[in-house]
Image (cartoon, rainbow, N blue to C red):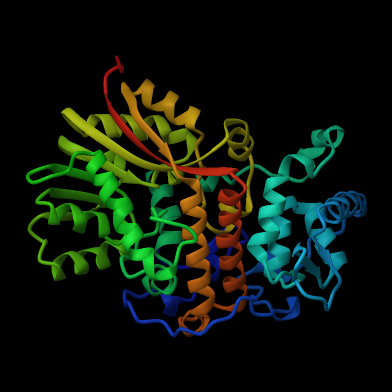
Length: 446
C-alpha cells in the first residue's frame, strides 16, 4: 500500500502523509511518562473511526463484561478512582475516566475494545506496562472457566484481506514499516535495530542499548558462521544494521525487504559505510529469493509471515541454503495453545500494529522446519532481554513526543503506539512471550 487507508482495520488509518519521509533527525529529549490526554469528541473520525465512536449498545454483553472486568480488576487490586493516581506504592493502578464506555467497548470487542478505550482516553495509568503485566500474568484466571465457552462472543475472525499473499504481504509490511523512518528513529537507538537486544546486565540502561544490539547481531552472525567470503542471505533487512556488520566481516550480503522506506535508508547507510559493493538490498518477497548461500539469517521475520505461509517460509529457507550451510533465526514465541487461539482471532495487534502477523510457538517452528527438511541444532531463549528492550523503546518514545507530534502523528496514534509497546513488554515480563535464537541445518540431527 502506497497511500494511507481510512478503514476501521489497520494502523495505516493514522498515517499522516507528511510523516512518510526518509529523514533521520535527532529527536528532542523531553521526558514524560503519562500518555497525552485525549477526549473522544476530539478524535479524528476519518483516521480512527472505531475510536471516535462507541460500538452499538449491547446491554447484556456490556453487563457481563462489566461484571467480569470489574471482578478481575478488583481482585488484582488494579482499580483506582477517577482523578486518583495511576500507580501507588502498593502497585500499578488503572484509572477509569468513563466506566460506561470502557465496559461497552469490552462487551462488544473484548481486548480490541480494551485497547481502543485506552486510545480514546477512557482510561489511563501512570504505570501502563505494570497494569498490563499484571493482567498478562493472570490472563488464564480473568474469566471463570464455565464462562470461557462464551469467548466467541467477544472475538472475531481475522480479515481475509490481511492474508500474506504476495500482494497482501507487501501491503501488510508497508502498513507498519513504511509509517516513517523518522518515527522509528524517535525511539530506536542509533543502530535502528527493531528487534530484541542482548544486554550484559540488568536493569538495562538506555546508553547501553546500541552495544546490546551489536551483541545480539554478532551472536546471530556467529551462529550462522558468517566470516570473510561468506555468501549471506538476510530475509528482512530492517534498516540495514545486520547487513552492515556482516559486510564488515567480509561477507557478501543479499538482503530482502518489502518496505520501500527501509530499503532506501538501508542503502544510504550501507553506501555511507563504504559497503555498497558487498551488500545488495532487494525489494523482494522471501518466496522469490534466488541463489544458494552459505548462511541465511532472518531476525523476527517469521512473525509477519502468517501460519498459512510458514511452510513456504521454511521451504524458502532450505532452498536458499548451499550444502553444509547454516540458518540463524531470531523469533518471538508463545505457548502452543495460546498460539492456536490467537491464530483464529482478530486482535488489537493484528488490527492496529501488525496486520497479517502471528507469533509462532516453539512447537510450530519445530514442526514446520522439520517438514521442510531442517533440523534445530541450537535453541536459546532470552525473553527478559526483550522486556528491557521494549521498556527502553517506550521510554525513548515518550521522551520524544514533541518530535513524533512534529511528524504529524496525532495524540490517538501516540496513545496507540505506547499501548503497543507496553502491551508487548508485559507479554515478556509475564513470560507469556519469549524470544529465541535458533540454528537450523539441513538433515536430521544425529
